[in-house]
Image 1 (tube, rainbow, N blue to C red):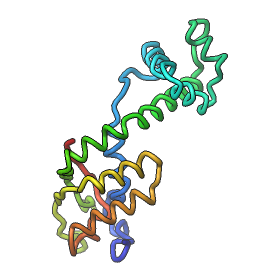
Image 2: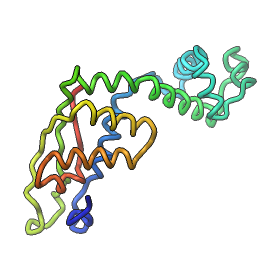
Image 3: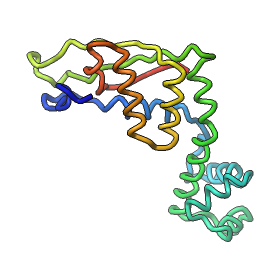
Length: 190
């Protein structure tokens, strides 16, 4: 759905594709260790989380962390280099995302009721007054099946799938749905 909004930035409107905003909102639902990966506490917390399961050890191996380095870190003989700390952090957040997918789906499905979202249209403050469109904040309830498709696409890094979900959401907005293909933000409380 690109139509007349295909060149939406031509007159200085500011925003992002709705699928990207949806991905940002889902990403914000993933919580975890608050201590940074550069602190001793953060490193130890990530190591505890990742070494507690086979999936955690596999996530570290996928990031290139060797068993030898892991043994030295857990024994306290060495501490990870900045590159290794970044790999440890990627392994942690990757595993964390995998583990919270079912929880996020349940929260957004709300026992079959779905979750209402608020869609903020593109920011037109820098658009010349004669070129602005009158767009309001829209609210719509997204059905559980749509949330499931969105979360699955997000979890697998499927941007095409997220775009298809967003096209479905904008189609549900009716005749002016195309104007909300690009947004400044999307919010929900789940």
